[in-house]
Image (cartoon, rainbow, N blue to C red; front, side, top):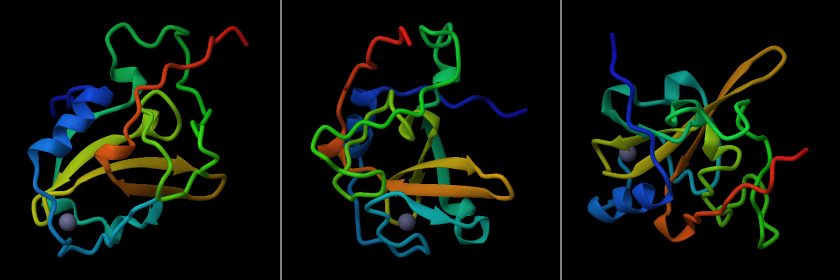
Length: 143
Ligand SMILES: [Zn+2]
């Protein structure tokens, strides 16, 4: 029985980075400035500590719509999904499906989620950059 990691919001994310002192990564993850595909054998599990989750289903009472987290992405500056400068918007995809880890070796904070394709499962990892965290509200879920 594992305890659920606490659910995090934008401010909590920023605080995580502010309290750590990132160093040059010694582990196998590489820079991960944008979302990168990460096979399970490259994921240095023994060095990773789960510090929280952005998944909406862990939020108290679920999300407002009572349904799945959105697949909508947040790119007000014209960035793309895998851009190193794409914002971290916790309520938007893919942050809203991510768990948050800290690396014991390089002290970085990393987000990870799992993408389920037709024939494969793909882990995606991105190193958290506090400067890119935005507290963007979801558009009205009237659709
Ligand atoms: Zn590391």
